Length: 388
Image (tube, rainbow, N blue to C red; front, side, top):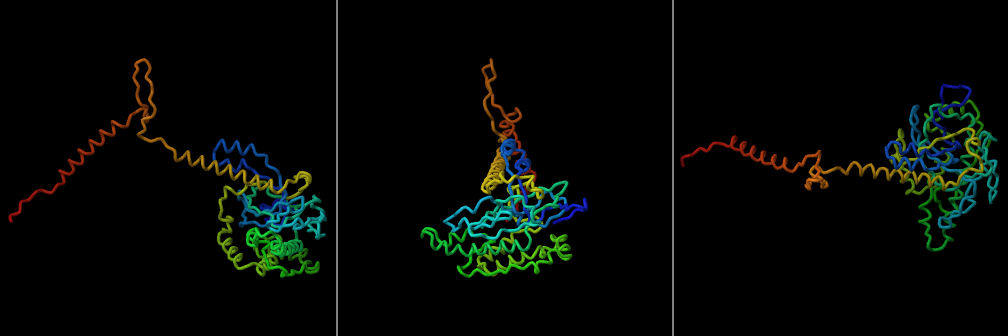
């Protein structure tokens, strides 16, 4: 959270806060504008971008004021149970309802957003192993008003991590019962970092702290940490520390090596070292969610993935056209097409700037040969007869 000095009675920040729910919408026109490609611009304008409800997981780079955009990892929120994927061992009950939604096949306790009563949708779920994506959130001149932002507190985030570990622990057992064509390794390849594969019946118990343990969230110390949470990242909140510790205890050494490689590839000042032009550029709203997106209009997460893939395809094609325009140049000695001179019946070759370079080049070559002969004669050593 990054506070602004303006409007002290409201919570105005220049970069959104991780752990919040928000509405995002792709801005394809701004993504292709720099290419100065009319075809790409028309394709971007033809896109009908929708608004999507997402959860802001992490900020991927240190934020500073007056940046054009801020890098985040976001996860879409769905309005249905998790689609079944028998090949990966995923079942519809691998999801968590978000209060006021209390519907779940196994009666799972819903996550409770804070402040209570501000989350405006009663049919939303977090999906297990939902595909998280990196986005660039466009900065606003008026900054972001988080006065009525809805977030998950430490208790809810620990609860979500614990439930994902339980779902992850079930995957090996489910895959063993699947047809022989599906191997356990193939299913494990799709595991996310937040829900690592672990041996069956060995899921660690992560105690959920009591309200007394979490009382510090509402005390003066928590207020001080909240106002400076982005600078000392280690104090993001207790949930982050718990999730990291749980992953360290259950993640295999191969996954640990992958984490080290991911960290090494990241620049904390600019985010992951990937193709920034292909990272979706989105507009974001973080307060008054119900005014920005009605419950009946919340799209399926697959539609968001399809939009992001489509704009990436448009940008790649624009790059190809741009490169082709730079590399296809006229040959300086190309005579060009024949032009009919009309009544004279004669014809001639169109050449570069109306001049045929063939004859001048022949003359220049002859003169160069003559000059080289003269220079050779001028600097030749004199012949001196030496008596034997």
